[in-house]
Amino acid sequence: MGYPAAMLLLWTSLAAADDAGTAWLERIDTASNAGADAHIVLDVTVTDRKGVDANRTLEIWQKGKDMRLVRFTEPARLAGVSLLVPDGDTVYVYLPAYERPPKRVVGGQRQDAFMGTDFSIEELSRMEWAPDYDAVVAEAEGDVTRLTLTPKDLKGVDYEVLTMWVDEATNMPTKIEYLADGELARRLTLEDYRTVGPRPLAHTLRVEDLDKGTKTAATIRSAELDTGLEDDRFTLTELTR
Image (cartoon, rainbow, N blue to C red; front, top):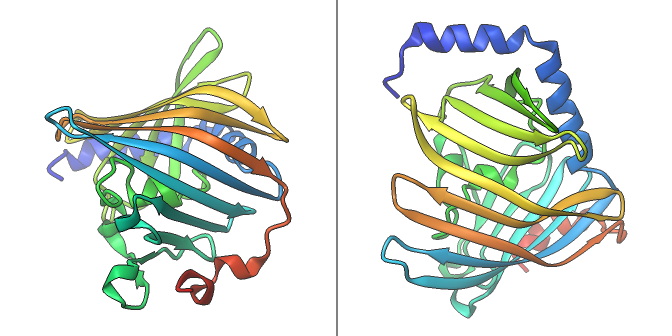
């Protein structure tokens, strides 16, 4: 990446020593995974650097903190393109048009944008922060706490530092900024939180890729929690049907 190793080691050691930061990540993980399962439909608009919009629909199923399926349902040319997390760690991508088995996503591939959106594979497959990031409390700003996050494993990482703003009332992020080589590279904004069952859900999400000049906006069309999803939905067999 080209960032100073000594500075990165300093950030990492500070983060690892901050019990308050760790506690915040654990609260975020608990709040964002409340409920036994979830089924969410998102309307997605991708805007290229020329300002041209393209509309898509994403459907997400999740059970616990270990299983997630993300699938395009519209437009027709992308229908069935999916991400599968069957065990909390392994990630597969399935492209039905190529008539090939699902491909496991490894290393830095998780940082890749997912099918022309500004959402990364990592972003769409992530269910918890605490296992993969250390955090320090940088500042409390009224009802919002600002955290500085550093990855525990630097292999395949595009962003060496993340800044996260968390709403103390919901224990949920409202903004995340990603730094690469010390420069702000992308921004995720989460707004319009509403409580669905036991879980606060941001009904509007915006990602800005400041390097590419593109952005992606997503709004929740529908959301259901505790619907009784079966484990079979999160298998490779089900993925390719």
